[in-house]
Image (tube, rainbow, N blue to C red; front, side, top):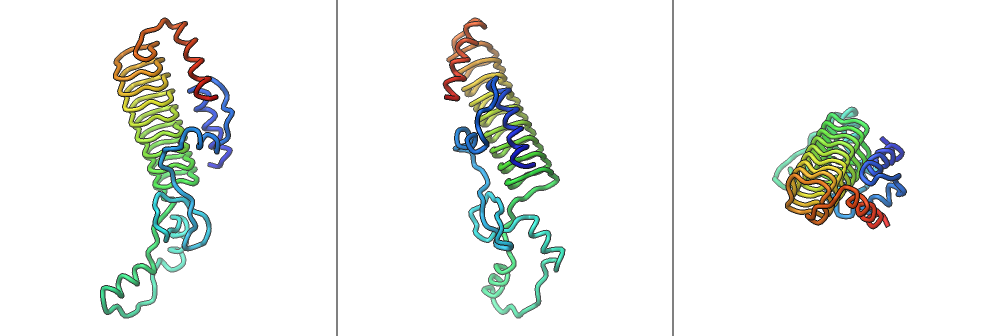
Length: 230
């Protein structure tokens, strides 16, 4: 994983969701779409003085890789010294205790991320589980090709999808289930090609909970996409 691969992932998601090529850089995508997504922060490692990424505000941080490298040298054992009080114990612990950053378990191709489990191809995200092709996201489970999204499970190809399950190819979908090819949806179930709908069930070609013909729906959808990206 590198910034080139991350850009390719976002380009693929963008075209699926908006039906057009992505005109934005990674930095622009983060500013436009991930402004309220909890993301790992860049800090200086207390061990190496190099940059690392973490989901914590604690100052004494080292990357998982650096901590592993130190283990290879001395297994993190230190020379015994007298400990006569709880204050001595706490001071000794402080000297060897670094909060681990850039934590990945059974994962590959991860960059600038933290707390990633059983996942691959993740860029600047945190708390990612059993997922792949994730950029600028937080707390995703079993998801694929997600951008600027959070608190979802089993979602695919989404931008700004939040607290949703089994949703795909959508933008600004929240607290919903089985919503596809839709934008600005809240608290809805089983929708296809809907815009600005809430509390709706088993519908398609609806805008603001009103039923439209397919042709007029797509005419209005183009205006919505232009408005989002202007």
